[in-house]
Length: 218
Image: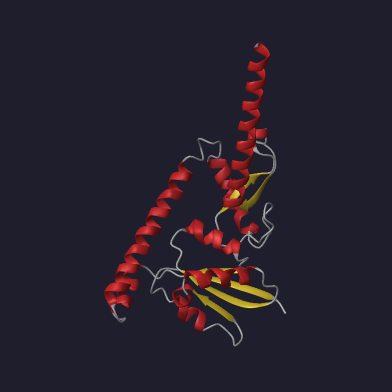
């Protein structure tokens, strides 16, 4: 029996529960945080992450694309479906539901948080040229991206899925002279976490060298 974990994300009133209800089979595990609550959902997600067989559907709002990617990696999702029919459709659906004010407020909050997250991602992307990741690097990433889907991340070993944030990583870090060496796709958060760890190691090494140099003067 195969293992299938489908992460379904999107704003309130996007149709996530309907999407799952129309496709789930008897015996499938369906996890919806709106129904389970955060604490129970957290426990169940740990179960999904360790599943070896069966089918699970995980329903979350997750307005931040980076959080969606992290969640997909955390639960070892095999598929990620993001539903977003557009603001006008969402608001129209909300007005037909019981307590429409509550649904309208939730939708507006989700849209605001998504916009804020996308601005943050854009701000990060604007610095790529300054970091030596300019037009050529971005074009190479766009070309390599479709080939990476379904392949294991070189850092965590989990599959890289469509919809996740993926980086074109230098196999030898640029800080160690790998600017023109081979490159590979990796989960963005895995790649950046590895870069942060390397940066910390290099800073500690520089401080140790500086301390040793000053101690010799005495």
